Length: 334
Image (cartoon, rainbow, N blue to C red; front, side):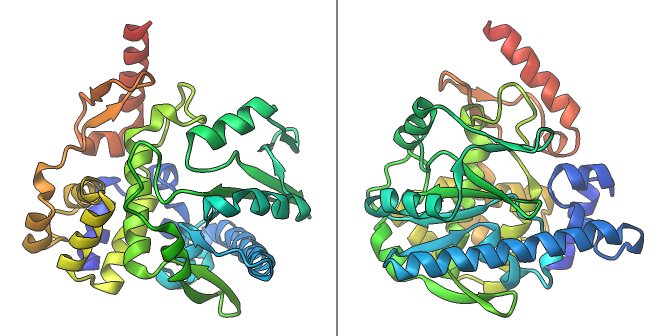
């Protein structure tokens, strides 16, 4: 069935290399293209450095007794992809319990990380003011971004302390239990780090995708630029995990209900079903009421619910039309 999805994804993106790049899928698209070997070789080298860094971080946190898991790309790179070159890391995402957040931040500072975002033109880290650092921690699910620049490699780090963003009540999610019930895995065949068990990891990725798609105007990176809120590299991650683990649908639904996030999982399934109507079976479509999921809504900067006046597939394969809509919306709101 996965071949159906690949073919339909290619159709959705018009076999266009630029669209694959836009959606963070360039490495996957170029994997068998020998003329682009330099891109693949660079990503493999960079990803291996990121994996080594994650192992170093994990060892230090474990020695300090801090339960943690790695999220998103780091948690799946050797589980779902045959080579570290197939996917490019944007950053290292890690989750700790909020009670251990302060000591975790100190540990990362001791590992030469700084709060800030790297300016690739100036080759320096842009340091935020204290107000920005405190505000992010108070009103988000993570601290302000951290990074370090070493041996011509930029290591970006996100420290999360909630399972999902604060727009949802997370009281039904026992994070301490999830962190104690995580599983070890060997990244790149050598390095042992921690991640959620597969179903929890799948659900977390759905949460993350939904929040980035629906609340993109509340992301500090937005500022009127293309938010890339429907990045298909993350949908591919979700599909590959679903394909590999063949989750029991009733268990998947039960855990989603317990966490209060059925709508978020359904949202991602609707995206998948729109791209490839022949991939998901009727059982999961019916259980999650996928066809009724609204993938055309989002929240503006004042938390007003808005509706895209553009079909989903057009938003996926024509970024210019999407950006014109957003520009007109901002003008109308002035």
